[in-house]
Image (tube, rainbow, N blue to C red; front, side, top):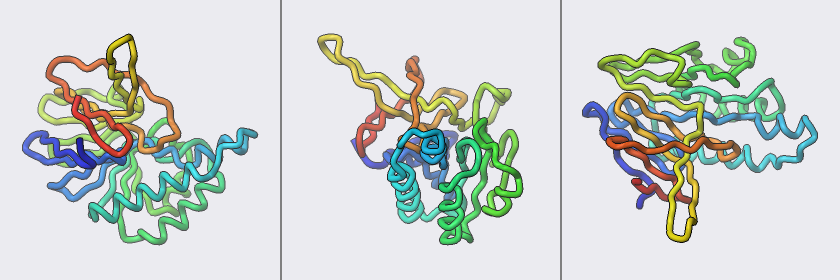
Length: 217
């Protein structure tokens, strides 16, 4: 068990963080998915009293990862934001000023529906469908693209989890990193999300996030 586990794909090293993101060593790039910034604010506007501390905790974890890995850029694989603009998006703009020199790339997800002027104000580079760096391709939903013969895909969207079963029909479900032969699926960076349980097959690698540790399944 560890806070960080290295994983190699096509001779590139990816450090899997227990804080739900990946640092690509070769490109000095931080990769994450499904932040859903503004989701708690969206619920509060609907009369559901979700505390703003959830949003603040997610943002603090992001700051910590930037301080630890010191990336030269950040790639967000969709659903960076959640629904229409609200007060939490304003907080993000203030946060962005502290990291104004850090390039942020967003591959738009189904929840990224803010106006293009807002992304420009936040100095976020938008990629409508996908972004490619060498043999690696970044998309929000792997089922929205064609699997390449040579490249490898990083995706998000489904918020993967894995169920660990014990004796007496007991089981626990945890968010996870999933690595198949042709594509990976990242866990949702935000902790205020649901999950979709995946079934691990032979030859696939799954890493469960258990509190502040990572366990290879």
